Amino acid sequence: MREILGRRLQRLRSSWLSLRSSGRTDGETPALLDAALHCATALRWPVLPGVGRAAGDGTRCACPDPDCVVPGAHPFDPGLLAATTDARMIGWWWTNRPTAPVLLATGGGAPCAVSLPAVAAPGALARLDAQGLRLGPVVATPTRWSLLVRPYSLERLGELLYAQDHVPSCLRFHGEGGYLLLPPSPAYGGGQVRWERAPEAGGGAVWLPEVGTVVDALVEASSGAPGGGSRLAY
Image (cartoon, rainbow, N blue to C red; front, top):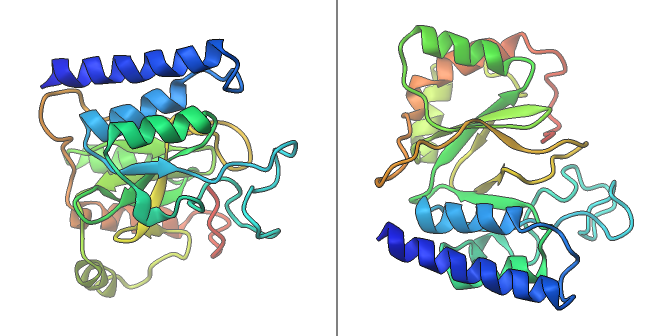
């Protein structure tokens, strides 16, 4: 199976390079295409391109909202429901938009995530490691880190949060109907999204912890984080 996927990826990369040499792309490297194809075909995670930044202005979102709070880092056209693991669709999207961010559609059968401010994240991970808890992939941006977890329902999340004395407003949950920016997409405010802990290589599905095993540590770490307002910054 991995040989078949490898041949498919190579064909799509070759098609992209042919377009690039003929001048039908903007000359960017296919890193985002490679990442999107890997997530979709090897990890079986549904992805779609983010809206990106406005042409000629790297500070504004390409969407119609002049006050967009996450410039470039959200779905627009196509919408979130278009997320797919189909390699042909992904190849078409990123061949036409090679600089588009890679978005994971969270929930359903795909991973969910919990994100917290970057200033508090290393301490939270250190606490979880000290407890001997096995963690899954961790996505890092200059402002936020996101821990990928197994899919959870709103009911399950509500039970966990109800048991907390206080839930900081800077703690975010990316569940059913949500999305998450994946590496190596450009990050909001500059920099690049990266794997703090990359998905483990292997023939099976990526291992993910239950959300309940990480919530306590993330709530405690986020409670003392500065700037814990309601504005979501990627």
